[in-house]
Image (cartoon, rainbow, N blue to C red; front, side, top):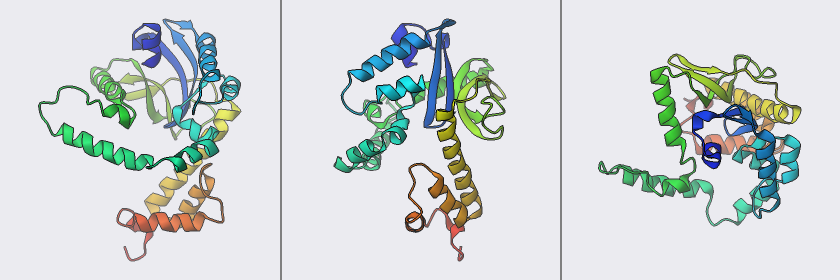
Length: 253
């Protein structure tokens, strides 16, 4: 949607080579009205990064990737800097979001509200409502349009298992999205994706079966997780704090 707005075309006229997982993805290519504009747009993006102050991506990293990283990849690529910013903040992001959502829910109670509240911009993902509405309409109408969706891989990304969920461009039909086959992920993308996907699978195993060993391995596997000396402390703190929701981890449940 942002690219379409920038170049003055409709969303349907933009095609993305988009691969990864939810909150961990890259745009590897862009076509506008069938024309490949990847190099020009990526060069322009790198140039803005070279002149930007603040928490943007390192332009050398983006140039090496030859792709646009998802905003959330800054947690992986610039971990110490982001951690320092969070420690310096007066409130955590969770505290900010809790307050924003409390205000939004109060506004949504008004049946006469007919516009998108301005405070939604502070929540993040302010365009998701438009994307979600378009996706629901296209599912209902069997439109055959292309959206970026989370769906079963089914071989679309060749170097990831068929049965895992990925975030990728898919053609929307009434029976669900059909992932569009794409080229294998390069090592820098595939490596990080595989590790985080392993964390996700271990987390599911832990949650479904109340398996503490799987939970320990999930924490140990995630790139941003605790080291082996702290895994047990972090796990017990998480389970104890959230005890009412995962009773399967406690023998008396």
